[in-house]
Length: 232
Image 1 (cartoon, rainbow, N blue to C red):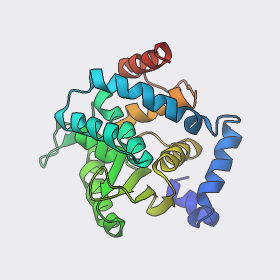
Image 2: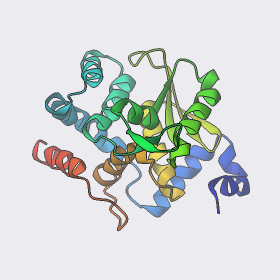
Image 3: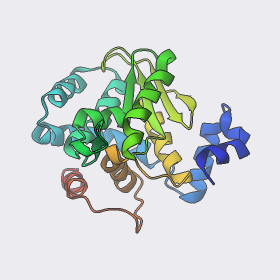
Image 4: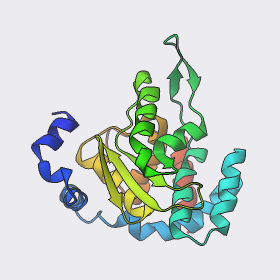
C-alpha cells in the first residue's frame, strides 16, 4: 500500500492526534526505545560540538558552528547540531542535469536543505516544497517525510514542522520534530532520502540503538559513534 493510500485509510492520521498515534505505533514496534533520542541528546550535543571543531571544514558550516556556541536558544542549538551532521557525513547522491545525465554531486548545503528545510515564513511552504520535489524527484530521490523550521536566519527560529505526504504537522520544539520525523520513517517502513541518509542512519543506530540487515556500512558513522563512546 502506498503511503498516501495508507493515510486515506486511516483518517485519524490526518488530524491533530496523528503525532501521538505515531508515537504509540513506534513504541509498539520498538518497546523501551521511545524516549532514547530525548534522553541522550544533551550529552550528545556537548560531545559532538568538540567533534565538529576538529572535523568540520566547510566555511559555511564553520560559521554555523560559531553560531551554535553563542546562541542561548536551545532550539537553535539543537537545529544546528543536527544539520551539521551532514558536514561530517557527506552525501554521495547526484543530480540529473537538464539533459538527463546524473553528473552533479550533492553538496553539504543541498543535503542540509533536504534534511531540514528552513523557510522565512511557513505560509509559503507548499511552493518551496514543490520546488524541492521537482528538483530532486527527477533524480529518483525520496524526500518525504522531512523537517521544516520557520525563521529568517538560523539563529532566529519560531516554528517547527514535519511535512509528510502533503500534510504539515506542527511541533513544539525542534528536537520533538526530529524525534517524530525519525519515527515516521520507521512506522511506515520508508527509506531515508539518499541526500541525507547518513545522518538518519546515525540517528537510528546511535540514539535508538536499532540495527537491521538492511543498514549500509558507513565509515563516517562508525568514526563518529566510536568518538562518542570514547569521549563520554
